[in-house]
Image (cartoon, rainbow, N blue to C red; front, side):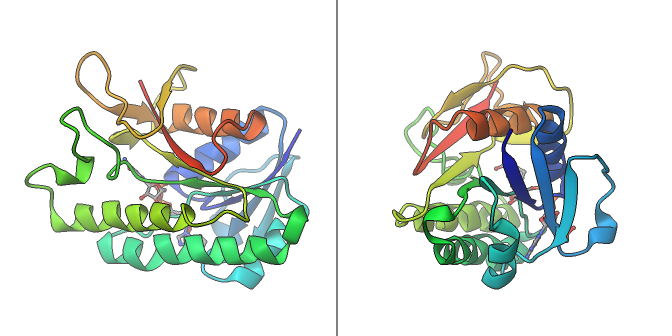
Length: 216
Ligand SMILES: NC(=O)c1ccc[n+]([C@@H]2O[C@H](COP(=O)([O-])OP(=O)(O)OC[C@H]3O[C@@H](n4cnc5c(N)ncnc54)[C@H](OP(=O)(O)O)[C@@H]3O)[C@@H](O)[C@H]2O)c1
């Protein structure tokens, strides 16, 4: 059993991470800006307040935890710009204050920076709308920042090209830098299977200091 704090616990992905962790017997703390938004309840679920952009509140919530998951999002493009990379810096700053006792950080990333079959990156595809490019590059900037961090244990998990609520199939494939593409040419994962892969990484760390990605 691990103690897992989850930022973004009210979100599409974060709520599934909370559910998966609880179903597997972990002790979960949802770290949220507004506790009234947490709809899940479980004997092993605690709710506390915290803001991913405020290192002091994150440090308070992360103290004593084994793993800190960040599943925060920024809504639209500008929202991602002002949330994703700034929160990466705030989370690392918070964990640094906890020294050797700091939990590992497992952050939800983006697919935009993944490599495609033609050797380019997802965000190089022609015709992508500006709002989506902003979201992709917000995650790219955060990943670039994480890659400078050597004194905090971090892992960044990029979804497949498409992630949406669906079935927990129990199956997925991983890669490091390459977009995972299925035989039918699609790159997708349900949020349920993404959460499964994330909690697998919590239980059996295999990507310390690295980004990896999951898809079918
Ligand atoms: N294919 C892809 O690459 C792909 C696809 C989908 C999503 N993603 C990424 O996955 C992440 C999660 O996506 P999602 O769809 O689950 O997002 P979502 O449903 O919009 O949820 C976002 C969560 O972040 C929380 N949050 C935002 N700012 C915060 C802050 N300063 N402090 C604490 N919590 C904060 C929100 O809390 P409140 O309830 O307080 O607002 C909410 O719980 C995003 O970063 C998104 O870009 C990637």
